[in-house]
Image: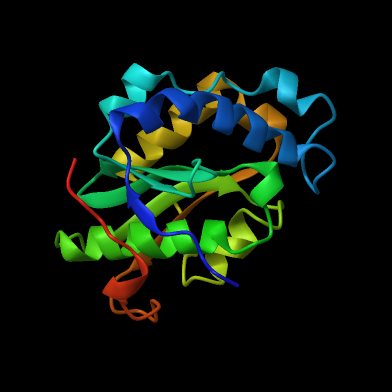
Length: 184
């Protein structure tokens, strides 16, 4: 299968990402650990302006079918969002975006990456575990992020966990030929 190139988002891409995130959220319906009516309790997608202020946004596909939003938390790169359009789900786009995000963070000298996710959804915590992430007790900035998620009502949607991977602990090897990452 030909994998879509992962690249830094352009301004034109950013305008399309809120709708992509909303479509991606529909994949949670009926998933293990997700309460009924969950879509009604999810926070609205980030606006294009908020996305433009992110540390990094990586996108894949033309038109864009998935994106990864990277921030920083407690000295670690933090995967704030990974969304794939339902029409592209299961084709490896999420894995390509995750690998590109890990590569981006490693190249910038971060000691690892953190994230917060639903613990029981197969394409959430189990997916990240397969990439070397482990569940951690959040401290400092990561604990603040988890508290903010709870305030937004995400814990009412389903059980969530904080996860971390430390670079040099079994990450997939870098392969610069698979993604073209520019700085934003």
